[in-house]
Length: 188
Image (cartoon, rainbow, N blue to C red; front, side, top):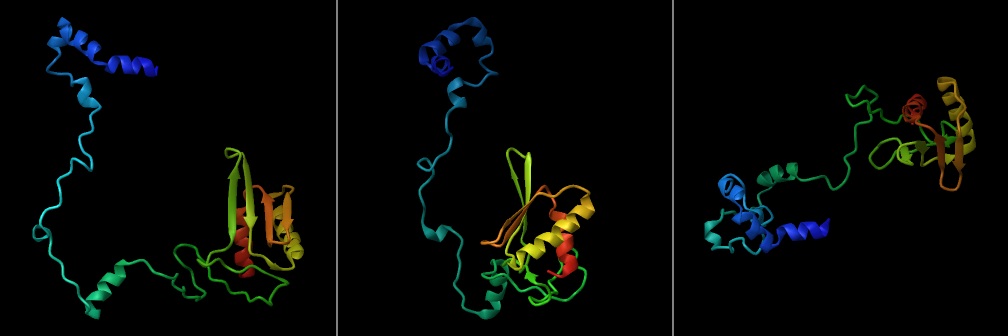
Protein backbone atom coordinates (compact mmCIF):
# COMPACT_ATOMS: atom_id res chain seq x y z
CA UNK A 1 0.00 0.00 0.00
CA UNK A 2 2.85 2.38 0.84
CA UNK A 3 4.53 1.62 -2.48
CA UNK A 4 1.31 2.45 -4.33
CA UNK A 5 1.07 5.74 -2.45
CA UNK A 6 4.67 6.63 -3.38
CA UNK A 7 4.07 5.66 -7.02
CA UNK A 8 0.97 7.86 -7.35
CA UNK A 9 2.77 10.86 -5.85
CA UNK A 10 5.77 10.51 -8.11
CA UNK A 11 6.48 13.08 -10.82
CA UNK A 12 6.37 10.80 -13.95
CA UNK A 13 2.87 9.59 -13.11
CA UNK A 14 1.73 13.18 -12.65
CA UNK A 15 3.04 14.10 -16.09
CA UNK A 16 1.18 11.14 -17.64
CA UNK A 17 -2.08 12.14 -15.95
CA UNK A 18 -1.73 15.80 -16.96
CA UNK A 19 -1.06 14.87 -20.59
CA UNK A 20 -4.29 12.88 -20.83
CA UNK A 21 -7.22 14.73 -22.38
CA UNK A 22 -9.66 14.02 -19.56
CA UNK A 23 -7.50 15.72 -16.94
CA UNK A 24 -7.18 18.90 -19.04
CA UNK A 25 -10.95 19.34 -19.03
CA UNK A 26 -11.08 18.96 -15.23
CA UNK A 27 -7.95 21.03 -14.61
CA UNK A 28 -9.87 24.07 -13.36
CA UNK A 29 -11.99 22.14 -10.85
CA UNK A 30 -9.54 19.66 -9.26
CA UNK A 31 -6.73 20.78 -6.96
CA UNK A 32 -3.18 19.85 -7.80
CA UNK A 33 -2.06 16.66 -6.03
CA UNK A 34 1.02 18.40 -4.67
CA UNK A 35 -1.05 21.23 -3.18
CA UNK A 36 -3.10 18.86 -1.03
CA UNK A 37 -0.09 17.54 0.90
CA UNK A 38 1.84 20.81 1.20
CA UNK A 39 2.20 22.35 4.65
CA UNK A 40 1.07 25.91 4.31
CA UNK A 41 2.32 27.20 7.66
CA UNK A 42 5.17 26.42 10.01
CA UNK A 43 7.45 28.08 12.51
CA UNK A 44 10.14 28.71 9.92
CA UNK A 45 7.78 30.42 7.46
CA UNK A 46 6.22 32.64 10.15
CA UNK A 47 7.25 36.29 10.03
CA UNK A 48 10.02 37.38 12.36
CA UNK A 49 9.29 39.39 15.48
CA UNK A 50 9.08 43.07 14.78
CA UNK A 51 9.76 46.15 16.84
CA UNK A 52 8.13 45.80 20.32
CA UNK A 53 6.57 49.26 19.91
CA UNK A 54 4.15 47.77 17.35
CA UNK A 55 2.70 45.36 19.91
CA UNK A 56 0.25 46.15 22.68
CA UNK A 57 1.58 48.26 25.52
CA UNK A 58 1.39 47.04 29.08
CA UNK A 59 2.38 48.47 32.38
CA UNK A 60 3.45 46.73 35.56
CA UNK A 61 1.38 47.69 38.57
CA UNK A 62 1.79 47.03 42.26
CA UNK A 63 -1.56 48.48 43.26
CA UNK A 64 -3.45 45.94 45.48
CA UNK A 65 -6.84 47.19 44.25
CA UNK A 66 -5.98 46.32 40.65
CA UNK A 67 -4.31 43.05 41.67
CA UNK A 68 -7.61 41.82 43.22
CA UNK A 69 -9.07 41.41 39.75
CA UNK A 70 -6.06 39.39 38.58
CA UNK A 71 -6.22 37.11 41.64
CA UNK A 72 -9.86 36.31 40.93
CA UNK A 73 -8.79 34.85 37.56
CA UNK A 74 -5.91 32.74 38.93
CA UNK A 75 -6.36 29.18 40.18
CA UNK A 76 -6.32 28.61 43.92
CA UNK A 77 -3.00 27.36 45.27
CA UNK A 78 -4.84 25.39 47.92
CA UNK A 79 -8.27 23.87 47.92
CA UNK A 80 -10.67 26.24 49.70
CA UNK A 81 -12.31 24.90 52.83
CA UNK A 82 -16.05 24.45 52.22
CA UNK A 83 -18.66 25.42 54.76
CA UNK A 84 -19.59 22.44 56.89
CA UNK A 85 -23.16 23.55 57.52
CA UNK A 86 -25.60 20.66 57.46
CA UNK A 87 -27.73 21.81 54.53
CA UNK A 88 -28.73 20.68 51.05
CA UNK A 89 -26.17 21.60 48.37
CA UNK A 90 -27.12 21.78 44.66
CA UNK A 91 -24.39 19.30 43.68
CA UNK A 92 -25.56 16.69 46.20
CA UNK A 93 -22.37 17.04 48.28
CA UNK A 94 -22.83 16.44 51.98
CA UNK A 95 -20.32 17.54 54.62
CA UNK A 96 -18.95 14.95 57.04
CA UNK A 97 -20.73 15.04 60.40
CA UNK A 98 -19.28 12.00 62.20
CA UNK A 99 -16.17 12.12 64.38
CA UNK A 100 -13.40 9.50 64.56
CA UNK A 101 -14.69 8.10 67.88
CA UNK A 102 -18.33 7.56 66.83
CA UNK A 103 -17.74 4.12 65.23
CA UNK A 104 -14.98 1.51 65.58
CA UNK A 105 -13.86 2.54 62.07
CA UNK A 106 -13.38 5.90 60.38
CA UNK A 107 -13.25 6.93 56.71
CA UNK A 108 -11.74 10.41 56.26
CA UNK A 109 -12.42 12.52 53.19
CA UNK A 110 -9.91 13.08 50.41
CA UNK A 111 -8.00 16.35 50.06
CA UNK A 112 -10.85 17.60 47.84
CA UNK A 113 -13.39 16.85 50.62
CA UNK A 114 -14.88 13.97 48.63
CA UNK A 115 -15.64 10.44 49.81
CA UNK A 116 -12.88 7.96 48.83
CA UNK A 117 -15.06 5.66 46.70
CA UNK A 118 -13.88 4.72 43.22
CA UNK A 119 -15.08 2.53 40.35
CA UNK A 120 -12.41 0.62 38.46
CA UNK A 121 -13.41 -0.65 35.02
CA UNK A 122 -11.06 -3.21 33.46
CA UNK A 123 -11.03 -5.92 30.81
CA UNK A 124 -12.66 -3.66 28.20
CA UNK A 125 -15.53 -2.74 30.46
CA UNK A 126 -16.49 -6.26 31.51
CA UNK A 127 -15.08 -6.11 35.06
CA UNK A 128 -16.29 -3.46 37.46
CA UNK A 129 -14.86 -3.17 40.95
CA UNK A 130 -15.98 -0.68 43.61
CA UNK A 131 -13.07 0.42 45.80
CA UNK A 132 -13.40 2.06 49.22
CA UNK A 133 -10.08 3.52 50.43
CA UNK A 134 -8.55 5.37 53.38
CA UNK A 135 -10.21 3.13 55.99
CA UNK A 136 -8.94 3.51 59.56
CA UNK A 137 -9.82 1.34 62.53
CA UNK A 138 -11.71 -1.97 62.53
CA UNK A 139 -11.86 -2.73 58.81
CA UNK A 140 -13.48 -6.15 59.38
CA UNK A 141 -16.45 -4.65 61.24
CA UNK A 142 -16.88 -2.13 58.39
CA UNK A 143 -16.72 -4.95 55.83
CA UNK A 144 -19.42 -6.98 57.57
CA UNK A 145 -21.79 -4.00 57.99
CA UNK A 146 -21.30 -2.76 54.44
CA UNK A 147 -21.64 -6.23 52.91
CA UNK A 148 -24.87 -6.77 54.82
CA UNK A 149 -26.22 -3.39 53.61
CA UNK A 150 -25.33 -4.15 49.99
CA UNK A 151 -26.81 -7.65 50.15
CA UNK A 152 -30.12 -6.31 51.53
CA UNK A 153 -30.37 -3.63 48.84
CA UNK A 154 -29.32 -5.74 45.85
CA UNK A 155 -30.41 -9.30 46.79
CA UNK A 156 -27.16 -10.59 45.28
CA UNK A 157 -24.17 -12.31 46.82
CA UNK A 158 -21.42 -9.73 47.28
CA UNK A 159 -17.79 -10.57 46.46
CA UNK A 160 -15.45 -8.73 48.83
CA UNK A 161 -11.67 -8.43 49.13
CA UNK A 162 -10.16 -6.69 52.16
CA UNK A 163 -6.63 -5.29 52.18
CA UNK A 164 -5.96 -4.49 55.81
CA UNK A 165 -2.44 -3.13 55.27
CA UNK A 166 -3.47 -0.26 53.04
CA UNK A 167 -7.00 0.15 54.45
CA UNK A 168 -8.95 -0.77 51.35
CA UNK A 169 -12.05 -2.84 50.59
CA UNK A 170 -12.94 -3.98 47.05
CA UNK A 171 -16.44 -5.07 46.07
CA UNK A 172 -17.00 -7.04 42.87
CA UNK A 173 -19.56 -4.99 40.93
CA UNK A 174 -20.68 -1.38 40.58
CA UNK A 175 -21.96 -0.35 44.02
CA UNK A 176 -20.62 3.21 44.13
CA UNK A 177 -23.97 4.91 44.70
CA UNK A 178 -25.04 2.40 47.35
CA UNK A 179 -21.76 2.78 49.25
CA UNK A 180 -22.02 6.59 49.02
CA UNK A 181 -25.55 6.46 50.40
CA UNK A 182 -24.40 4.25 53.27
CA UNK A 183 -21.51 6.61 54.05
CA UNK A 184 -23.90 9.58 54.01
CA UNK A 185 -26.21 7.80 56.43
CA UNK A 186 -23.29 7.14 58.79
CA UNK A 187 -22.03 10.73 58.42
CA UNK A 188 -18.66 10.05 56.76
